[in-house]
Length: 362
Image 1 (tube, rainbow, N blue to C red):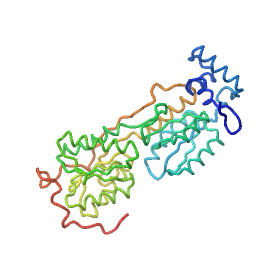
Image 2 (spheres, rainbow, N blue to C red):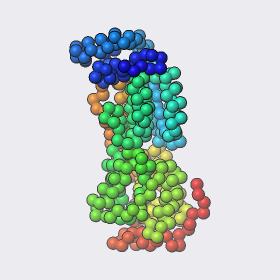
Image 3 (cartoon, rainbow, N blue to C red):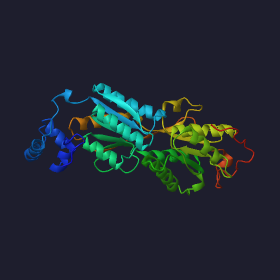
Image 4 (cartoon, rainbow, N blue to C red):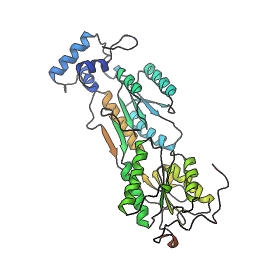
């Protein structure tokens, strides 16, 4: 059996040799009754054989500390997630350490060093796909893990919290189709993220259900930032056949499209309808207030914290895959296209000729 750098056997080692899950070993250690006698005996024998040193019983046996890890913190989206996690953690008397690893292996390694020194009880990773080495290290430490908005398809035993991204993307585009738009652009998020791909698939599904052919010239790949919304919105609006509506896969990109439209001399929604995704607080205060798909970000953070605290306490969550519902919030940035753009010909065929070109970038 493997041991850690100090020669100690971990509960991950015990679980592996006993052929049971980490929560099962935790339940034995915590004296829980919901473990069969045979399994309890097998785990207890291994604990004794390898001299596993139990922590003291009770809440003092835990650090009462969890880690929340983002790829970056430069977004109000992250603040909403944090708000949900902090609410649950505070109510449970648990502290939260917030880190940003910026997609860098060195940052992730530095975070692991901090986790070991803090003896954190568990971790929540946001828009990540735990690298095998990181996942193995967390298992070795016996640290429960929950992932919010996993980057890829998660492994079967890692709990995840997400939203109904496909349904949200589809509802946004069905709304625009219902208003009469047929030439609808999309600015997606990074294709490495599962949520980005799901929103794009929802866009395609909505167009196909209405018999509208997907025009790849109207599909642009962004990074969820305001700057990419501006740059890619400008590219869409500057084309020979610009869209009459744009679905941006984040509110920040939608507001970047607002700025692109303004610099082209277009008014939202008179000349261009825009729909976002997230429903960040600023969406309702933007001029005009933004039609968007509400992603329950704070609730996702709270659900992840709830699930993590269950795992820390040796409990097994009822489900390991949670998807919270999205909903369309209709405000003032979406309207029917102008009559001249709503015929059977491509709605954007009036082209961008005569429009004012952007004079600056963000």
